[in-house]
Length: 187
Ligand SMILES: [Ca+2]
Ligand SMILES: [Ca+2]
Image (tube, rainbow, N blue to C red; front, side, top):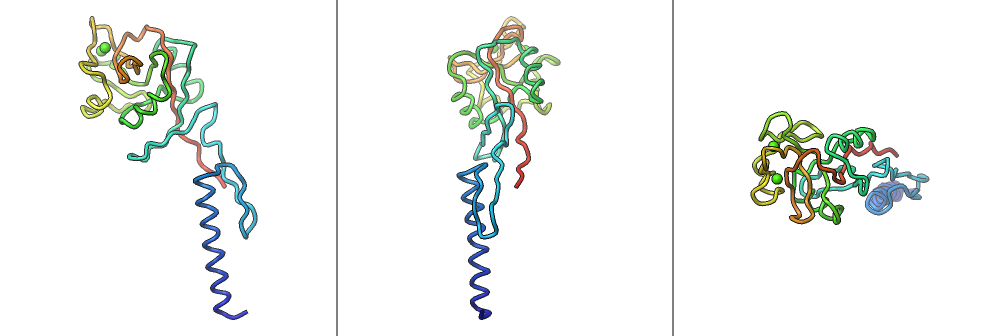
């Protein structure tokens, strides 16, 4: 075999491997893909326990979400339910994530993980303890919310009626959305 032919073969093997990898990544999580070197396996279960993967393209955020519908709970019990899956009530910091929630929640309001139970007016994200920024508030809350109506609203829900976030009484019963990190990919 000539040196030139060997180089061409090396290059074509290298390129075909990348094409297979890229195609597999885009289209076929979990499907074994045949390559010149054998089979490559891409693991599909990046979210377990019935959670679904979502990706916010502008921020690159990847998360596993699960919408719990029909077994309504107060905020604390919803938090405990998420915790039993190693998850937290979901964060909704971007308009893209809010759009994901809009698509998931169509019938009844749902708790997300944001509250000002500890210090009135200081809203804290359950998933990492970060605080609500002014921009996040403007982007994702309904007009005039959060309003702490009657001094009794410390927990945040997605409202179907307003298609945005609102603070409400933590004791109300609602559906809820849990979130956890994606699992590490293996091959
Ligand atoms: Ca409040
Ligand atoms: Ca309110």
